[in-house]
Image 1 (tube, rainbow, N blue to C red):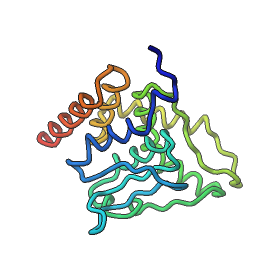
Image 2: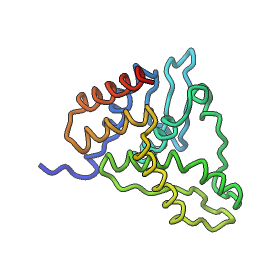
Image 3: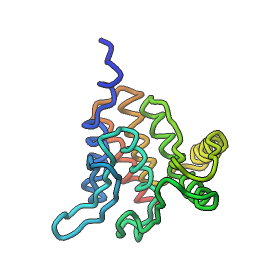
Length: 193
């Protein structure tokens, strides 16, 4: 039976994979949000960290997961990891700073997207900006960083999630099997780190 494209990549699956690998180990859950993505650290009212992706978009979920996979322990204690974000309309210097900050997370997003069997598109996020954005040059920088990750190794959490995605979407594992593989890799790399 052929699965229709929109049925192949469900939010339920991506949330189950993320939560299955990370909820217990990292006290972090993937949450469908509203118009804007956000990272919220745990509070007394919400005892787990939240990676909130925008509008129920699969690609937004992968992008926000990528940021979480790179953020260090101290950054994960800060809302939105303590990073700045200037909305669309950036000048040339601001756009360059944005692109430099986005290379690593978008490289991970590219790897995650490919592990899911989807097509990746870089995001330069500067509608209405005063500067012409060279999307192709940025895409090349992101692709080069993705290749470097593959050659040198992904960060620990990114590697565990990448494995779970590949096992589920490429190798045909069940959600439970893919989650177990991601958890096992996370546990093994933590012991050796």
